[in-house]
Amino acid sequence: MIVSGRELVKFVENLIYEKRQVKGYEIDLTLRDIYEMEGKGSLDFGGSEYMASDRSRIEPVKRSEEGYGWWYLKPKTYLITLNETVKKGFIYFISPHPRLLRAGATHPTLVTMDWNPDYVLPLDVSEMGLNLKENARVSKLFALRIQI
Image 1 (cartoon, helix red, strand yellow):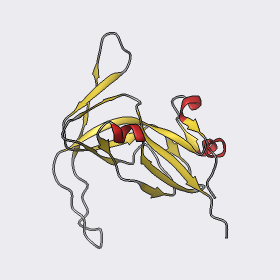
Image 2 (tube, helix red, strand yellow):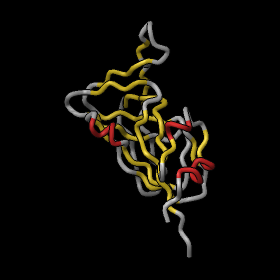
Image 3 (spheres, helix red, strand yellow):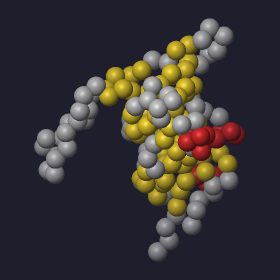
């Protein structure tokens, strides 16, 4: 059974503006930070050789007339973090926001039991590039309740 946004919001912290983010059966998740990868990572079967890729945070560019900054992204893959924390309670789906797709970027759809601001998503930007404002709604959160 799909969980309503009103019930789901009880499991989500750090919303920017609940009235705009919570709709029907979904919650919009917002962009916190963008990172550039600076080297390759390593992954093996046992985990002893695992190494995350190095990354550096990209600072948003602030315009004097606005309180929030913008990222002007070139075509490539970045890592992004989200503002919101999602507590355990359901099976969650985090998918790209339709506006992100129409703007020429995407990230994978994830199935997870929780989410916190330290987790990263790869963001793929198309050949035309992309401008993103701080706190942009880049993802949608849906949840399923499993009854056995």
